[in-house]
Image (tube, rainbow, N blue to C red; front, side, top):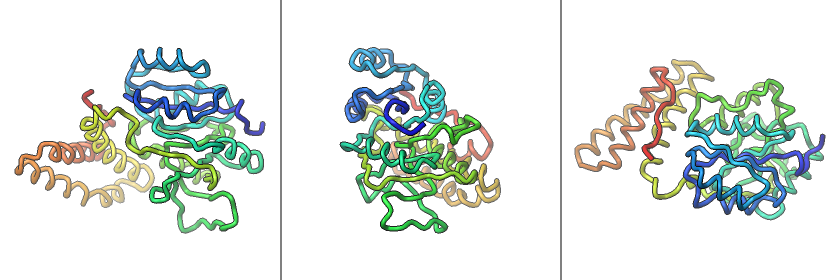
Length: 287
């Protein structure tokens, strides 16, 4: 079946996202199918959104993580395509239609993504082994950022999407890495634009706790990803300087009584050590 709006479900994972989710939803077509996985178990948000929008359903969860929450939304969907997006994105006018039109002409993709409208922060990575023609309206890439990924479910025969060991960060890189190894295509459509606020999926009132959690999980995920794909020794060699630097900075900021900075580097050390020891990504922000 060719791609059209009727066979796409938009999957959005929210967490303390009350302040920004409405702008995202308003940038989607009025009749789009939408599943929201509300990861802070906020029944008030569920009631508000379901009262305002007849085309969405909100599933409450207790902070199960980005990968597991997205997987849940994907598996609940009944369409052949799913569009995983973050609550802090907004589509430009006609971007979704441009993606649909492109997919009708070239449907040999596992993942298709729009292009971030901020050229300083591209939402994709291209390796040296990929050659793209300048006159093409798309790019063939190695990976795309997880805040906007359109999945062709027919290319996921095993029904395996995100590795649920990742709580936060690099779950999209891991998924793209696996699909590329399987010989699947990942494309970015140049003319389909999206705006990404970046780091604003949660309310600013929880800024510090969210920052601590991000630092913990970034380091945990970094080591886990490298160990999974390149082996233990290679992974440890890549993070050794990060670990030493984080330890020294934690000590330094303790000495000068900068509690906030100390906590950031303390989280980095903790995340790395837990990952090195093979422990699960257990840390959750104190919200």
